[in-house]
Image 1 (spheres, rainbow, N blue to C red):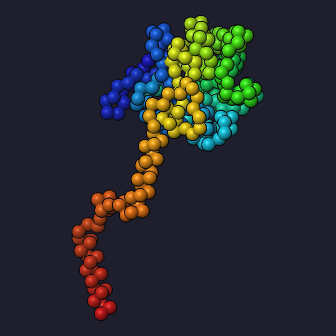
Image 2: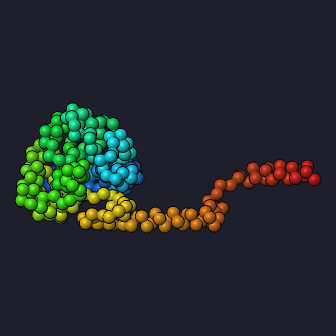
Amino acid sequence: MSITKIFPGGDSRRKITVQSIQQKKTDQQRITCLTAYDYASARLADEAGIDMILVGDSLGMVVLGYDDTMSVTMDEMLHHTRACRRAVKQSLLIADMPYGSYHLDEKDAVRNAVRFVKESGAEAVKLEGARTELVKRMLDAEVPVMGHIGLTPQSLHTMGGFKVQGKSLPAVERLMKDAVALDRAGVFSLVLEGIPREVAAMITAEVKTPTIGIGAGPQCDGQVLVLHDVLNLSFGDKPKFVRQYADVAAVISQAMKAFKSDVETGLFPSDAESYHLPRETQAALETITERKRAMRR
């Protein structure tokens, strides 16, 4: 299901919903998803026609400078999701539930999920792991859920680092079992991260819900990447699965250096970039100045 809206300027777009995402799998249409963390990036992604915008807890590393995603708080995630909400008109806006917001108590977890919808305008939340009972509780509270299995960054310490998952037969069986369980629990989509493409293909063929790959090969129903990786705005080594589409870091760096040079050499601002007094005010000011000079003689 998609809803046609008329936006300012007469622009007609189809609002993406959880139902239209699911329909894309039925129609064998590929699904696009990017992360965004502020008004500008979310607006650009929305205007580019990206199907889903994920306010990911990856903001901890690429925006806030944390060492990992687990330091991100609920307040930080709500703040950034609200900023993205103000920009998004067409895309489906999803909020990543941060570490600790759904791990300890189911009631608190559901309450936090509702906060994302009620306080920040998210249209769905994302959970890591095969938490099927929690998914059902959130759906009972009218909060759509995106699942996430495979390499789950919030399980960094138990996994022993960022390692590809599902490489042995028992591991493949666990992933298949988790995917089917989440599918039956009612997730509207399922992120598959850091798993062999053959396993992702098996899961995609097995489950009814759309699969969204990140480091899971091309057979998934859709793909997601971190925006800062796409634009070369993240620091450090990038995973094998990242494709850089632009070197925005180089453009920004060059612009900053040019600004510094122009200020230091007096080239900025120019007369054309300055405000001027009206002619009559300037004339009156010159008359006053001349009188003061005359009085000093």
